[in-house]
Image (cartoon, rainbow, N blue to C red):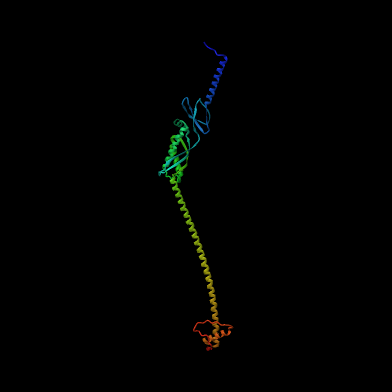
Length: 307
C-alpha cells in the first residue's frame, strides 16, 4: 500500500532539495575560481583528471573545473639566504653566509612542477644546491682571502651556484657575501698583527717627524751660526778698521812729535842725550802737580849734566 504524504510535506521536501542544489552549485562555483597574485604565475592542475596544463597562467582570477588548483611559482626574482659552516683551503673552520637572487625559468615551469610538485619542495632542493656551492667556495680560498679578496670569493660563489642550479632550471641574478665568521684564535692573531702593523707605521711616522724636527733644528742652528759668524766678521772688520785708524793717528802723532824733536835738535844743535834732557826739563817745568814717570831700569832720572 502506497502512503501519500500531505501536500504541505511534499512542498517542504521540494524546497529543501532545491536549496541543497543551490548551495551545492554555489560551493562548486566558488571552488571553480582561483586567484593568482601579481608576482606569481601558475600551471593549472585538475585534481580529478590528475592532469597538469602545459601553458602558463598569469595573474588574476581564473575559472576552471571544480576542485582544480594552480601550481604557483614566483614571476619576479626572489631573494634567499644560505649559510653553512665550512672548511677553508688552509683547513680553518669558518661560517659563510650568502644572499642570492633567483628565478625559475618560465619555459621550464612544467618540468619543474612535475619533478618537484610545488614551490616549497623546490626551495628545499635549491637550498641544498646553495649550501653545496658555499662548501665548494670555502675549499677554494684560504681564510685570509675572504677578507682580502672578498669580491673574488663572491664572484666564485656566484659562478658555482649558477652551475649547481642549472639542472634545477633556475636563473641566478647575483650573489652577495652576507657574513663571514672566522675562528676566534685566527681573529685574535689578525687583530694582533694589525695592531703591530699600526704600531710599526706609527713608529715610522714618529721617526720621520723626529728626523724632520732634528733637520729643522740643525738648519736653524746653521742659520744662527752663519749669522753669528757674519756678525763676528763684521765686528772684527770694524775693530780692525778702528785699530788701523787709531794706529795711523798715533803714527802720525809720533811722526809729528819726532819731526818737532828733530827740528829742536837741529835748531839748538843738541845731541840725542841733550835733546832728551831738554824734553825732560820741559816736561817738569810745565807740570803743575805731581809728575808720574814710568821708565825701566837702567834709565836715568836726570839729564841735567848733558845740557
